[in-house]
Image (cartoon, rainbow over all chains, first blue to last red; front, side, top):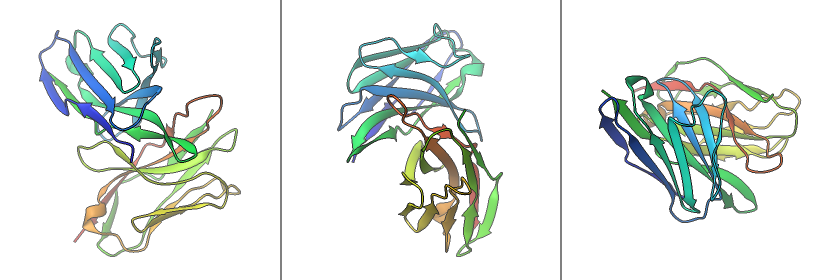
Length: 117
Length: 114
């Protein structure tokens, strides 16, 4: 089946540094990938949609300059949290749009736990 | 806009009890409906789905039926296990004009005691 991986699975960084999270579709090509943020005991909040080779589309309220998204290939999207602060600590989940039989589905990565100290 | 409403948790059950997690939705079109499960510290996994009215999705003993007349997609399992303890998200997706992006409910935490 379609598998999406994320790396790293968890990261701790100091305030003011930048962190890059990778999202890969392992056995399928994903024209579109999505980045979500999940706060403890809450639902997923869509941050942005990224299409291969073009600029990401950010949801309202998400800072483009803070959360840099690059979708350089059909199997890789990256999210860079720039100048991280403790309030950026969260669980970040990516997903990829892939064809499963006749229909498209979203396949989710395992998530990356970011802790900013 | 589209929305999903789930029952508040946590739902606490004893092993082998019957489970129902209610989910209702609001959508302008004819969405596909999903249940996702998130185990502690992990990402989301698709549990089951239904793409049209009266379809029943099923997986791992869980079932949900797409009820258009009541705009509901309640999740049920006849006999829960401790390993079913997780957070369950109901979602809908209306693929209008491109990639479809699920709209998630808030999630319902299920705790199963031995």
